[in-house]
Amino acid sequence: MSFDAKTKGTLLAVAVGCFAAGAIVTGVLDLTPWSSAESNPSADLEALRRIGQGFSQVVKEVSPAVVNVRVTAKVSGRRPSFHGAPPFDFFGGDPFHGFFEQQPEEDRLERGSGSGVIVSADGYILTNNHVVTEADEITVVAADGERYEATVVGTDYRTDLAVIKIEGKNFPAAKLGDSSQLEVGEWVLAVGNPFELQNTVTAGIVSARGRSNVGLAEYEDFIQTDAAINPGNSGGPLVNLDGEVVGINTAIATRTGGNMGIGFAIPINMAKQVMDELIKTGKVTRGWLGVYIQPVTADFQKQFRLKSTAGALVADVNAGGPADKAGLKRGDVIVRYQGEKIEDTNHLRNLVADTEVGTNAEVGVIRNGKEKKIRVKIGELPEEEAAAGRQLGGGFEEDVGFEVKNLTPSLRRQLGLAENQEGVVVVNLKQVSDAYQQGLRQGDVIIELNRQEIADVSDFNAALGDLGPGDTVLLVVITAGHTRYISFELE
Image (cartoon, rainbow, N blue to C red):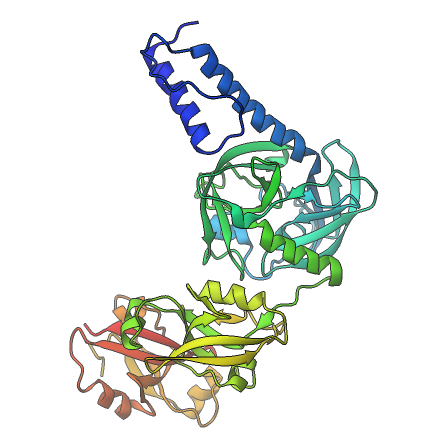
């Protein structure tokens, strides 16, 4: 069998790429240049066949545990609601779009489809919360075509995970791996039921780890992959080359509604922790610090005299909460938690959530340029709280970009403020201003400017008096009942 130069180069590139990514094959690929008289195309093709056989073996191991999850919801003039925006809305579409069968009557049935993976021989199945949320009936179609009625064991919208169960014994359970051992560039397979095409397998690599602030869930630490994921893959497994589940496929970034090479999976280590609690108690208990936090920007780094932008800025403290009782204050920058250096707000939030309630946690903060340690007895996250540390942040003065007005009794009532609240309210805010770009909004109430308390317009003007173009302004504002920091440059 002979090959032209272009074909030979392509085959060699594929083979080298597969080996570099850690494909499971035996034997050694002959990397001798194709032009050499000693080259052996037959041996190289055999190596490629073994790579394919390696993928096939992984699929044979995991596919029996992958199921199609079909849901039905009885709707009375409404769509099933998610806790907040449906995760896939962020990416331009409802994951069930195209699967729902809508009837013209006010009362109708809506049907959707997703995926799941059996994790125990007695029928526990791990899937996404958004696949089963508010479903009235859940039918599981196993790989062998058998159908089972499923019940919800527990759901956790904060991670978009759910556990359902089917009755029976000796179900084929998937092996769960260790997602902390994943490497960027490692081969992975996505298995699921995209567009109700049961047991579809796609291959790709781990594109990135630790993706957060994606906007899909409150607690995020996503694996990003280019293995093709499409509507219907939600809840299916992401598998490594040892046949172990390392993630639960959850969402895609897309402008078309289909795969564009950017998919997200929940790490199995996070999923296992949530799953175990849901099976044991039906709910997830998380630690609570009782602070509202925001990222440390370059401007904040300068204002608070920090060495880097690592850490989480305390924008507000819940009155009577764990942090308040321990003495944390607005303006503290949390840089360590239980001895671990804090990278960003998401990192802190996940660490606190994983802390056992009642733990006396050591929190390292920078206050007024000096680092100190504070012991905080971690509480239990209240249901109404969004996170262990909720992340915030979201005559005309030409150099500021907005006007301010004194608070009146009417404005205080309208904004939900205390009767004695002092400060100035932002009005006529220019959207082209740096203040707007950094998150200031009309209706925000400014109570500090460059660490000076602001009671009224005269205080505000006085605080601005010594500042000029290019100077940095640090505001403390009240938004929706909580304080946060905003920093911008005067124009």
